[in-house]
Image (tube, rainbow, N blue to C red; front, side, top):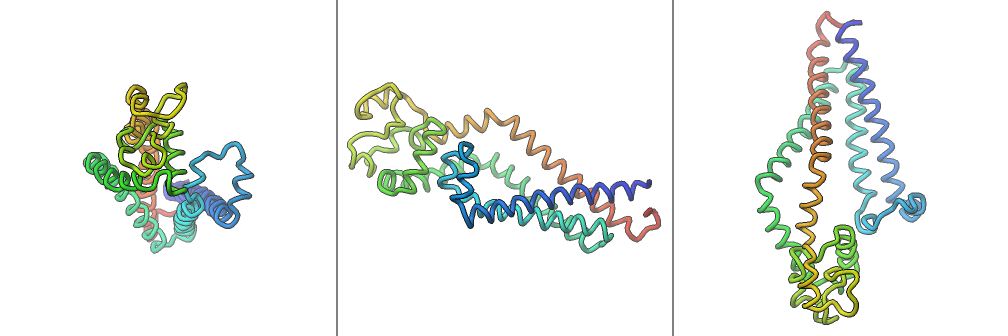
Length: 242
């Protein structure tokens, strides 16, 4: 078996698996969007509070659709030896790869800028809508529960907030669990519960090796797909096919 035939077969198999995975993800997304209550009953104890406010259905549909298209282009391009389909596949994967690299660079270079932007967007919402808007309150309650944090920066984010004006105390997440009564200024200052942004950064740094490994693996697969698709594209009109 020639190198061309081997790579052609591997290209087809790899993209066929991508196609199946995308189709499955697309089906789950449609299911969640059309009948979310049945989906939550199915996952049962494995569902988390995040499911309450993240629109999982549309996310699964979007990702699944992209994977289906990529898998279809890769499979048909390899099986039919279509230069046009292989070139489209190469272009899409290249765009995705460049976007990922650009996002990584922006995240590294502008992390402090991102923090200031998030602060400008999140803090006004927190001060004016927490305890007053059900959706915003659910999101923040789930976040503070999962990350064991208080506010965006710390408890001072709730000073002069709608929640403070209404309840005359800080949220219970800002105090230690064993403390009873209202969450007063003395209690929150002694509890020293970190802000959610700092907690999120800590979790990201803690899992950096895992995230980095996954990202490196994805980039390696994308690069391999780019090399193989371009190799097949260049060899189609040559006599090396078998």
